[in-house]
Length: 105
Image (cartoon, rainbow, N blue to C red; front, side, top):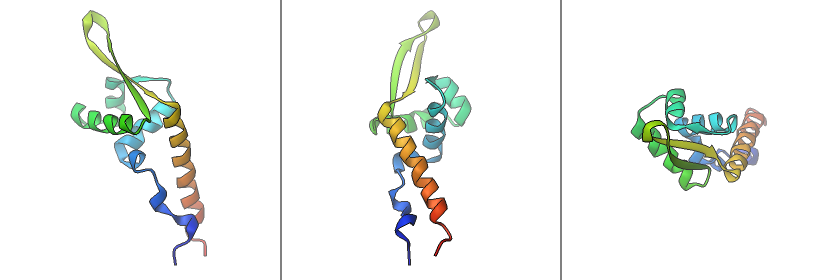
């Protein structure tokens, strides 16, 4: 019989994907990061990362700001929103609850 505390279906799917999880973890410790920095940290291709960033942006968890850097080169800055920070904290608490509930009868 499944325990109510072990409700894995309450995990936030917008965060739970590996790349999105890595982005949220990185941004939770940084004020902001540019696209290239995130890509280098989480790996993958530009297109793959962009898809994951858009999912987080659609959920309201991050803001993406396009700016012009040196020599007019486009730069995308990523920031965790307050809603995103709250979702991240809920996510961590849900994972902790699953760990604590696991194996208990």
